[in-house]
Length: 154
Image (tube, rainbow, N blue to C red; front, side, top):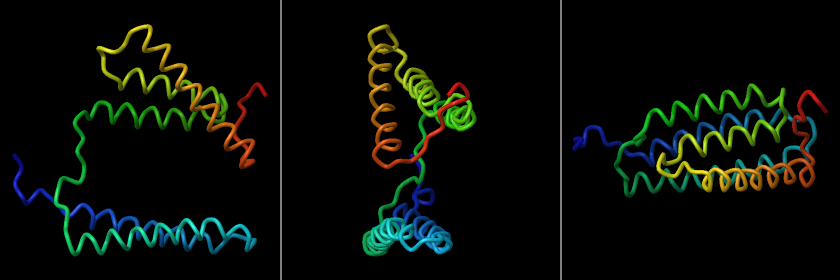
């Protein structure tokens, strides 16, 4: 078992990190051109600031000591990072829908338990991935009106 020297106040580290992120984004939001464009990002940043401050206070009053990163399978982490990079790369070529389907299905099958890799599980994975991608697509493109890449054939 690891000694106490390797255990860190993880809440403190995360709180400080989040406060830095909030500060960086707050500065970036100031450059938006329209006052209406600033409302939602500021609201989210204020919520993040409040939650990060609560976590900071909690970390000072009752520290939670543990390992910052508990990565049991570094191969899966590597696969996920490569898949994320690949997804970003093929995003504009294949479009949001196709690239997301490929990556979701790939990650779910590859990172999942090897004992569960059968035809029934693969079909289930394809169905669930399709539903998730369709929901995200309609949420962003139709409800929020955020343009998503369509790919080279559209």
